[in-house]
Length: 298
Image (cartoon, rainbow, N blue to C red):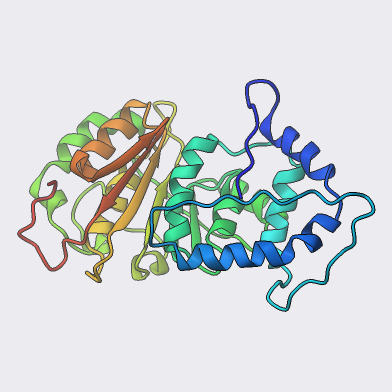
């Protein structure tokens, strides 16, 4: 179910909050069976290109409350926490609704799955909730920010990452990345490419990631670490994925900036672009592990 409001007039989350408060608790109970039926049929038809919309009737004050069916159970606490947080918070995610919807659409098909996110931010709880039942990991450069987020959202799995490069080195790193040591598909930890991130937690290298989001580290000034290595590493993880017939979806945010634009086009490849919405670019990269003669870019 999707709610939309006019972001140009007032913040969307404020409008949604007012809308939520206008509904009494009878709504959830009265429409429980209908919603359960909708979700069941939606899962059965997920392979088709059709879309469905439900518009529950708002019960009147004197409406009788029907009993909930056995299939309608309590939502998980993690989802409840996300709903409460975004309903009551005045801080909105860094991405726009349209940008978020690109990744959410893929998660709807692939979740529960393995989802790796470079960057820890105001949208992290949302990504974890959208991948409910899956494994979502966040990699963050700022230890103090990790500690701050954990105070509010202790269930989020995040790790501190150190980056050795700077945005000011981007042009030189671009040339390095075009060399044979950087275009050879190998395990990231054993790569000799200067762009490869070799100091990540062991788990990051061992998991077969279905989705990878590059929305960090900081990259808006010359002394910032930039996303050169994160973008390159995401691409190599996708290419080195065990070939199980599935591709890896990679999303890069802030492609309106020079580094994110150029590095994603070169190392994730224009030929693998599925969609661009605003500042978000979506790539779908197949495994190269069993086809080492496959060109780096199509």
